[in-house]
Length: 426
Image 1 (tube, helix red, strand yellow):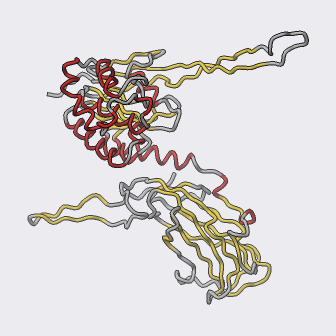
Image 2 (cartoon, helix red, strand yellow):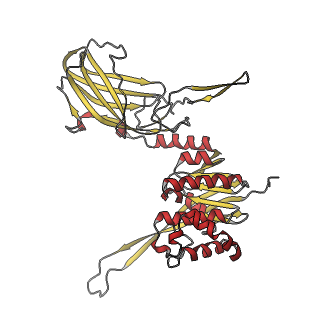
Image 3 (cartoon, helix red, strand yellow):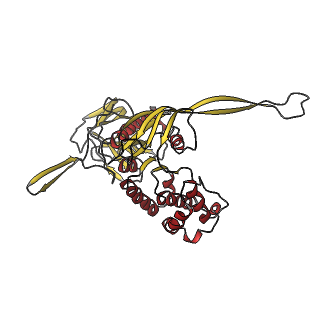
């Protein structure tokens, strides 16, 4: 039977730090000593009235921007820090993987540090003897076990710390980004072990900027911002809300680009017709630079022609940051005939549901003649945009096919969730 008593209770927790700003002045005439220093002290609340519980066996992710309070909260749970207000209860043996090298004595060998670290976590000497070989083998440090850890690389630190943490069978495991320093093969081993730990009923609290990992591992996610809980929900719901917030937050005036700022290597053409400004807009027509997969998008090409130009063709190209050319629509392909342009005007390309997956992309824009033999203006990969996952769970490749899955089994039809959840950007 699963216990109804939380493994971790966090009740109205706040943590205050004091920021010290030192100031100095030049020495006055006749003073023998250098200028005196004074200090201004400003309070900083890293956490502010945070409350939530973690159930036994639950895996909870903490997400948010740098400085949101995630790492501070883990240190409070691990009792490395004490709250300024409120209280925290963690029931059972707690293993914490926080800063690299935390809990290690740099002058001691890897062997000695295994015994020291495990002893601090309440493991008996006899139990460490039994586990020692497994710890070193998993960490892949057999050749370096008697080397002082001050000579270890960051990856070696991470492997040893993780191996100790999982082999002592903690009731609560706290992980703060440290897995990101290991190589890919070791990260894969770690992920397998974390899944095994979850299945054995260990409570896990994870801090990571790898939101795909957070969604895959966590039952629930707590989104922190400026020390406060913004959302506590199912992993997918909280991650999507956070990503949509980040997409809106990164909007800025740079999403309305003036072509006059481009360099000669980015732009060429006869100049008879010129694209003067490019706007990347959301579904409400607001210029933005960040979008989510499945959301509406509009690309506005503002142009100017000093004299009439007959049968122009406007187009654009989408490139992934790796250089891969993904798409190249233009008005001729779409069957839109523009008899002539003169003076100022706008040509728009509307995308009802953006198919690009998460990543950074660049747009090229151009205006040419109908036969594509004369280039009036070409602007090469001059306009960046950022795409966040939005409502799609797809991770591989550069774009979603927006399809649906269907399975027939034993004469009964089962239809999977749509491959893409269409969103309207707010």
